[in-house]
Amino acid sequence: MDNQHLRSLRLRNFRSHESLNLDFNSNFIFFSGPNGIGKTNILEAISLFSPGRGLRFANSDELRAISNLGNWNVFSLFEVEKEFLEIEIGEENNGKKIVRVDGKRKPLIYVGSVLKIIWLTPAMDRLWTGRSSERRRFLDRIVMSFFPNHPKDCLFYDRALRQRNQLLKNNETDTSWFLAIEKQLAEVGYRIDSNRRKVIDILLQAKNIKEVESFFPYLEMHLSPPEISNSEDFLEALVNGRAKDRISGRTLIGPHRSDLLVRHSAKNIEAKYCSTGEQKSLLLSLFVANALAICNQFGKPPIILLDEIVAHLDQANLANLFCQLQKIKAQIFATGTERRSFQDLNLDSLFIDLKYTAEGIGCFIN
Ligand SMILES: Nc1ncnc2c1ncn2[C@@H]1O[C@H](COP(=O)(O)OP(=O)(O)OP(=O)(O)O)[C@@H](O)[C@H]1O
Ligand SMILES: [Mg+2]
Image (cartoon, rainbow, N blue to C red; front, side, top):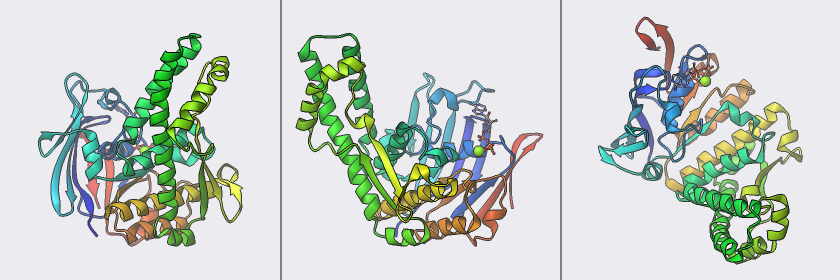
């Protein structure tokens, strides 16, 4: 199987890291160090090499080091299918994000077609009890790997939705104006819904999902409300729903109202009613299924970022997770305050300890 590895990373004026140089020759890289030293910032920098706004969903301004007025930059060297790619992402003087691959300017979507990077963060531990918008965003990130135009569709849809909601609020009576926007919503909305459903099927049918089952709880998963069967029906529903929408001042139907519903199969209970540890296991089942599905679809494992993964996870489940991820030979970057839990896992590891030194933040390999 082909593979992808991040071989080196250079951060300049990136959040708390004014200048940080790292090289990686392993499949498992673990960053330890005290709270606030900048471990998650490193994972965030790696996450920028995928479509979207990275694991904190930050805009370009937030990424610039507060202490320094210089532009932020992340330089990387990836090894993909035995070829080396130098990819740089940073900001221009006008604050806009810029991406260069081997010195040539490229759209971020291009990087997304070459590299597959997925992550788990502590914020996702609250996924099943949080708002439906968070679950949609979580699902949409997965969809992106399989349908690179999905983020563009989502942006387009949101813009058209805002326009329609404004017409509703303004009590606009010009039906042709409504219809023009609704046609756009219907076309793109149908595609968004259908791509989300296709990806749920891909995840559920991931070839090795049976193996995942034996380690993590089997989950049932579907998207509510019922499927949009085609754009014509959705358009009709939007037109017919205008009067009702006018009363509430917003559009009441469409993929912006969908929710990803997950059940713990064996317990026959909705994810939100499961225990904290069970909820984490459900999340991990889905995450591993995503990694396997990427492997099946693209013939290479994703690069995996695990921020503070040990919270709510006992040693057996942690070992299970790494056993699954090792099977597909994914390169994994993880953070934690303690390396102890990872030392017994028998991984091809590089432990990097971040410490404050007189010269700034130092990286100590041991
Ligand atoms: N734009 C920025 N410029 C400078 N510092 C920033 C910027 N954004 C965030 N920080 C700081 O970066 C520091 C490190 O953050 P990070 O989340 O990476 O720490 P961490 O090592 O993961 O800590 P923890 O163990 O608590 O998760 C924080 O103190 C934060 O305030
Ligand atoms: Mg952190």
